[in-house]
Image (cartoon, rainbow, N blue to C red; front, side, top):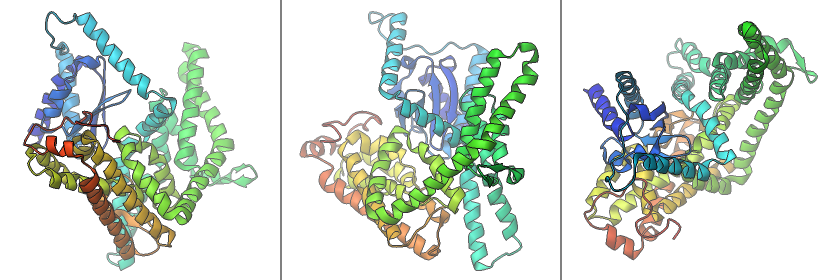
Length: 499
């Protein structure tokens, strides 16, 4: 039955994004179906948002993103891919935009779509944003393995500390650590794929970093260590491999390309990795770890305030995934990332704000229904449904939600500054789902208590800030009625978000 439901969702989405021939690529992250379109004008945004399974839509310069929520998106995406393939093989024409005959011609409509896409790119295609999105594309596919291995590592830690099932502990340690010990290979593979090279060559070069034999090599007057440079070194090595491979493809004759290009790519990139990149990336990784530790140990409350307050805008823009390499580097070095519990407070502020909206608008049944359906995911740290369905369209509640996140982050940061340092053994989950992943030298009980205290502060401040400052009188008058749901990505109904 669930398979039929997922197939029905995919079938409902497909014609509303222009049909199979309007789609150039398909991917998904933890909550969003990401598709690249040939013609943006063929998308029916309003009809998409009206689908029961769709929690919101987001558009950046590269992809059109349909928010379906965790679990659902992983099940709908394969069904969507299958329908697209079936539609292409059957030769179905793409859906065309419906307009009055006297309006514009098909050519003019296509030109309008191209202009829309170009305008969107002009706003968002800054070099920094494009670079961060490409980095995110490398690490997002690794998140399921990071989550699974992190949870197993946490379970193994509990068994180790309690002395239960001692025969199982080594097996769980191997299961949890196997992926992390070879994560550089996966990063190298995805890096080459993202930047247009041969993925297996990127993985081959990155594998040098984790090969035990590098311990016999001297570079910069010291022995190299297996894993030195970590994911940053793997990323740099694979990117270099892509550049070398493309140069070879340009100059090597086709008759010997199959022999020469892979050999030269791996040899040149490998030598540069061994005698340069591993050392440099190792120094950068060490600096990142030292800075994160120093930031929370000395900046404390202020650092938490800034990080917790700014994380929701990063989620809104889809740029939060660019932090994955930093989290992964910290996990490689210390066994956990101290930044994630602080950043997770943004979700608490969002939940508090949504609860305040629910209380302040008792007669707006449609919006209250949206909040009730999105709150369970919000408590588990998935913020997109509440962001795009509630706070962002309303404007002010988005700002007050950020205030709640800042307060929760300040609480966790202050405790860190006072000496209770802890973090998460994996990335991906937040909210209540982060409890099983918490780890630190102060003990599980204290870690859980401080994290729960931060969530409570985020809930309370987000609620209070939204309840008292999230609405103007005009907003309350217009919204406190039984009306249609607010469009998921529409601008604020009465005034700008910063009013």
